[in-house]
Image (cartoon, rainbow, N blue to C red; front, side, top):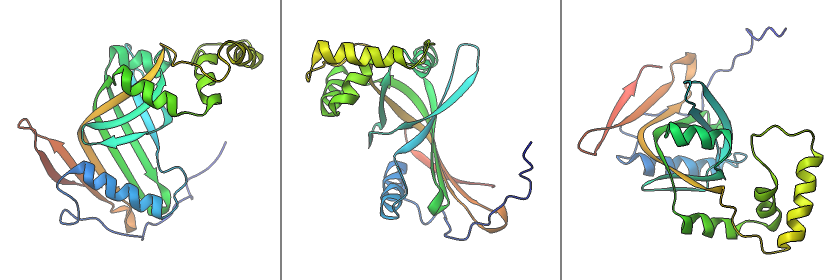
Length: 212
C-alpha cells in the first residue's frame, strides 16, 4: 500500500477576495480560463463531470468543454453512455475545473438538458473525420469482448460512410445551466480562498465567502 500522508504542498501563487471577482460568475470564469490559457495549462478545457444514477450512485469522468456562454456550459458525448443514462433520469450535474499551475479550482452545479439538433449537427460537422467515425464505432460504456470489436466497427463505418458520416442519432450535446459557482484559490497554511455565487429566487447572483 502507499503511505501518502507526507505528501503536501503549500500554495503561494495568488489570493482571491470578494472585491476581486466579477459580479457575473460566467465573466469571472472567462477571465480565469483566459489566465489558464495564458499560463499554458495543459487542456484547460478538461473538466470533471459528475452525475448520479437512479440508485443515487455518483460517478465522475473527465470530458472536454466545448463552449462556455451566458446560458451555460456545453459538451458533446454519446447519449447511450453511462453519463447519458444518468442525465436522462437525473438531469443535474456538477463540473470541476482544476488548473494546478495556477493553484485554482472552479466548481459549477446546475441543471442539464440537451442542446438542439442543429447545434449538435454543427459541432459534429466541425470534427475531424476519424472522430466522426469513432462516434459511430464505439458503443460507449457497454461491455465488449476486446478492442478488435471497435476496430472492426471503425472499418465497417469507414467503408459505409467514407468521408461523409452523418451525426449518429445517439450522439450530441448537453448544456449545464448553472445555479452555483465556486472559485477556489489555494493559499498558505490550507487557509484557501473560496468565493461562491449562489443563484437567488429573483435570478440574481449572491456572492459569499466560504471557510476553507
